[in-house]
Length: 113
Image (cartoon, rainbow, N blue to C red; front, side):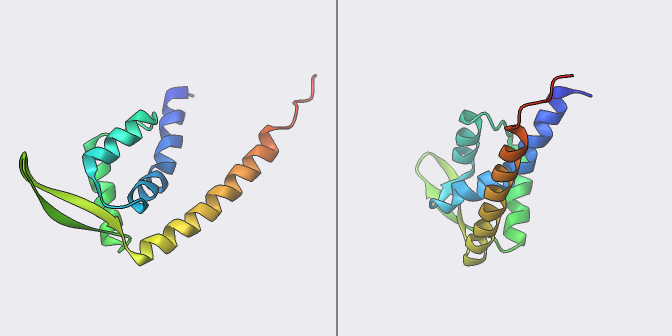
């Protein structure tokens, strides 16, 4: 089994949750999301982020608006919809339960053979 592949899969599993949290703070541009995720060692590229944002938009969880830019083409800024806020709330409950459950399991001392 490959450790790096497992680590990548773990990060992918929580990427949607992290993106929704970033968007929940207010209007955000995709490259700012990538910068924040990268600085948090949640390595992500545009080829991963944009399809995920499209799925979130199609599911009615996020919306975007175009904003003119002084330094180039218009930019898409994302925000959460009301449905997206409810969805994020549900994910946060699940996340907290997972943290608790995982801590219960991983905090026990292994039995020595």
